[in-house]
Length: 548
Image 1 (tube, rainbow, N blue to C red):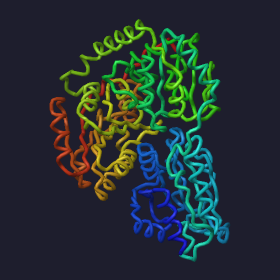
Image 2: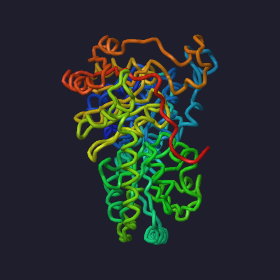
Image 3: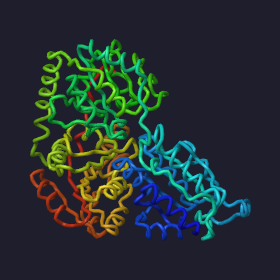
Image 4: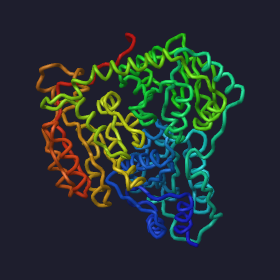
C-alpha cells in the first residue's frame, strides 16, 4: 500500500463522502479518494471550502473534511470560525513549511499554524507519513467526541504531499468517530430526579431548544417530552427546526433576532429546561429574557457551559438526546392547562400582529412577505440554509417550518449561506435546499455559483435584495452621498450574473410572482438564483423584551 492509498482508505472507513478543497493539497491522495467514491469538490476559495464542510457536517452529523495548500492555510482557518462557534465536527488539512527550507525565503512560505489555534479544538503537526495514521485517528476522535468542533492537521510541505511512498504505521480507522455525537453520556440520576421535581412543581415551564438538539438528532424525542408534560418549546435560531410551527406547543424563536411572542413566553417562565444552548447574548437578548426568579435546568455535553451565564438550579451534563430520554422515563405530570391557554393567546396575538406585513402586496416587496412565502412554499422535506444579519432576523420572525423540514444557519459569519448550502446539498442530494441570504451576504462567495454548476449542485438561492446593508445604515450620517457608499450598493442584476455562471436566474419585483419564479427555478434543472427586490426602508425591528 502507498501513502496516498492509506490516507484515502482511512477517510473512506470514516464514511467521508466529500472532500472540499482548494488545490493543490495531497494530489495523489485526492486521486485515490475518487477511486473509492469520495467526491473531491474543488472550490474558489479556502474559506468557502471550510463553509461547505461545515454545512455538510451540520445536516449529516458526519465529520466534514476540507483542505488547502500552505499558502491558503490562513483562509482555511478563517472559514473554521463559524464551525467553531456552532460546534461542528470538521477535520481540516493543510500544507505547512518544511523544516528543510525554513529561513530561506521559500516562495509563499509563512508559518501560519498558529492561525488555527483560536478556531480549533485540536491543532497538530504531522511531521511525516509514518505519523499520519495515528494522528488522523486522533483528529477524528477529537472532532466528534465530547463537544464537537473543528480540528486541524498541518502536513509537511506546501501541498502536504509526503510523496507516494510505501505506507507506514497502522492503517486502521475507528468509524464510530466519523459521526457526531460519537458517544451519548447520560446525566447523573440525582440530577434527573431533581429536574423532574422542578418540572412537576412548575406552573409556567418552558423548554429552550438549542443547537445541541439538532447536533444530537433529538428533535423528535424533545417534542415527545414536551407533549408528555405539555410544555411550550421556544427555540434558538440554531434550533429553528426542532418543532413544527403548527404544533400547539410551538413557541417560536427567541432572542435578539427573535419573535416577540417567543420572548414573551420565555419572560413568563418559572422553570426553564435548557436543552443544548449556551444561553449566549443572541439567544437571551443580551441576557435579559430569563426572569431572575426562574429556576433553570440546563442540559449540555460540556459541563463548563452550565451556569456560565445564568445560575443553574439543576446541572445535567450529558448528550441532549440521552438526557431527554432520561427525563421522559421519569416524568409524567403535565403543566397546568392555564399556561397552555395563555401560550395559545400569545401565539394568536403575534400572528395577528404580523399578518398585515406578511400578506402585503407592496412593491418594493416587504421582507416579511418574502420570508413568510419561503417557509410556506419550500418543499415538504426541504432544507433552509440561512445567513446571518437581517436574514437571521427575518427568518426568526417570519419563517415557519413543518415537521419534515430542516434548517441550518450561520452562527455569525456573513456570506456563510451560499457555500454552506452546497455542502448541505452534497449531504442531501435528494432534498430541496434553499439558501436564504441578503445581497451583502451573497456577494461574499458569488463565485461558488460556478462550483454549484460544475458539480450539478442544484441549490436555489433566494436573495433578499435591497441593494444595501440597511442593517448598518444607522452608523452613517443620513443624507451624506459619500457615506451612503458605506452601506448602499450599485444595483447589480443578480439574475443576469447567475446566468453568466451557467445557472438559472430570475428577478422578482412583485410578491405575486415569487411562487412562479420558485417553480421555474425547480424546473430548470440547474442551480438557481431568485433576485427578490425588497424595500430598503424596512429594517428588522428591535425584538421584544426589557429595556437594555
